[in-house]
Image 1 (cartoon, rainbow, N blue to C red):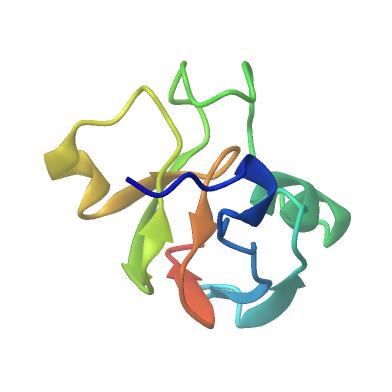
Image 2: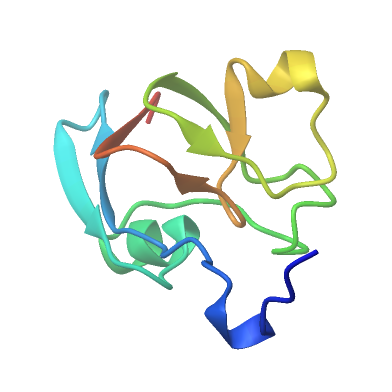
Length: 100
């Protein structure tokens, strides 16, 4: 059995991505470490939030393209196939399209 020191283990590096707002015709960059809700609010897009932890479901929005990385506790697996909690989600690919 080989011992591996914790600092040599590979950890995934968070990537930035583009947020595509279909109804508004906007494309917004989301940098590593930025929350989608913060990017939207800075761009003047009104998004209602309450807990900002993915528990209450207030910020849940339909997504149409991309590969969302879900970190919420409010959506079922079935709901995650079409919706995302914006306060705590990321995207695995280059772009995430939202029905906003």
